[in-house]
Length: 387
Image 1 (cartoon, one colour):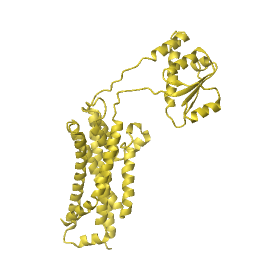
Image 2 (cartoon, helix red, strand yellow):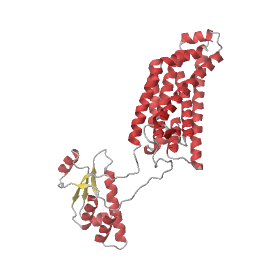
Image 3 (cartoon, rainbow, N blue to C red):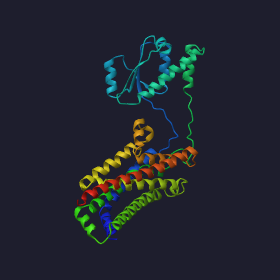
Image 4 (spheres, rainbow, N blue to C red):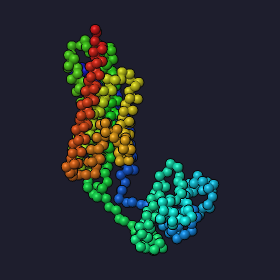
């Protein structure tokens, strides 16, 4: 077991980097989990400092002002472009709406719209846009239903004060929120890919050095035995890292994690991602022969897939085209399964199909990546043989 012992010796030299990545992972996972797993069953409106320039002075304009006062603070600002720009620049106001003359005919019965100005790069103004559109649409519907304009405005303002009680559907026993350990498992692909690729690539580069390779080829240990020992080293490293990643949520969350009915699914999902990470490590080791390139390659791979596949940025808020492209990466399917496990404890037929599809595709990705690595390794070995 000479090759296996050498594998362990080189692993021991890089173990400090392994624990460094684990510390980074813990800090990221716990910090984001604490900020992101706050109770989401409380919904609050946001109040802004806004300015409304009323050039109409009619009933509808007064009704709109009264309606907006329920939600926002209306600032008294003169109808002067330079003054408005100055106030917005210093963030004294965040939104300006100009009510034109003949507001009722132009915007209630016609296709006219208010002239609005928002803080560049801010999304808060869209909230006010929605409220103005809601007010005008409600008044328009009521006047067409036979209400006079003053009565329609009065009814819309009165009804807008009603509040709705929102309660999330509890499908997982955590009040509709994702459990804390689900957040940790969400970030696990980053640590698995980082640790395994970093450590194993360094090990394989050491074994592929010309002098070491020549000594191994001249040794009494058969080639197939050497390959078996390297495979055992890979398996041992993968199980060790996977075990550490499983112990962490067990220690941090204890009974909550250990009694989760989805625990076997979480373990299987992370184990499959471990296989994917081992395959990626093998492929990178066949493509890189210089230690100086390892950090760059591993960081691009781990961070790139983490940002594209829903580890650091939630899949629900990502662009559709990005999500489509991410489906060609294994981490996307890991995150799809993890999101399904986070919010459900019982699965319907379609959810089970999604669950096992995610598992199957991760396994296929691992096999495909390993196959490409074997082909590249075989080609390199053929080139090194004397003609």
